[in-house]
Length: 178
Ligand SMILES: Cc1cc2nc3c(=O)[nH]c(=O)nc-3n(C[C@H](O)[C@H](O)[C@H](O)COP(=O)(O)OP(=O)(O)OC[C@H]3O[C@@H](n4cnc5c(N)ncnc54)[C@H](O)[C@@H]3O)c2cc1C
Image 1: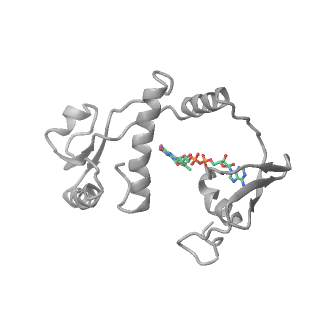
Image 2: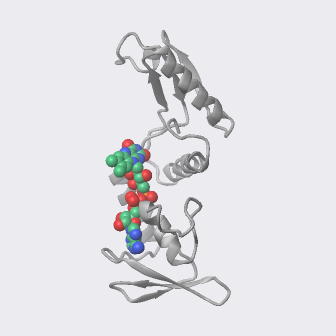
Image 3: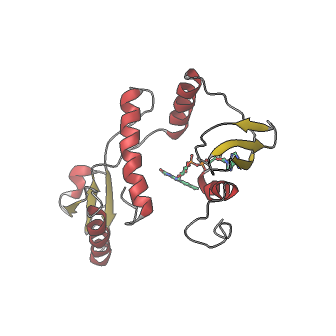
């Protein structure tokens, strides 16, 4: 949460926090999920002011951001260097072990019937006349018929969305941002 500026990414982070919490409850002890919060510190007054401004904007989105005085910083993190100006505590921040979390999510999906096709690229999205998804074209598994697609292509998400005719907001041709 702590480094997300107000806007779409912060909204995603808030949703993500809620989903990880739910996943951790559904898969107890399997994700190394630690809801330990986060602390962002400033070494000088100008930096602290910038953190305050960011935190004020984040609070408008529902983020819990609590200012911490210089004296109280070490109560949260005893190993901090001395002489810092202060900081902001984000109690909603959490941590997972990413490789373990990915493996456990994959295992859970496969237990639910998912099939894994490694090294297979989606090269096209097939749409029906009503615009609804009908299937995917792939480079190694041919056509996959389906009624829904989850776009989890990360940095390449815009390109995959472009295959379905969706333009991204930041550029007119849906391709120049990646
Ligand atoms: C250097 C670095 C450090 C980071 N440190 C942190 C950190 O400390 N904490 C943190 O929370 N986040 C960190 N991040 C961000 C984090 O890694 C990403 O937010 C996260 O990995 C995104 O996960 P994802 O599953 O959405 O996408 P990705 O992990 O990018 O996965 C997308 C997948 O889609 C596949 N793909 C793309 N196009 C297609 C296609 N057409 N067909 C089939 N597959 C396709 C890709 O091959 C890839 O495997 C860091 C990122 C970087 C680069």
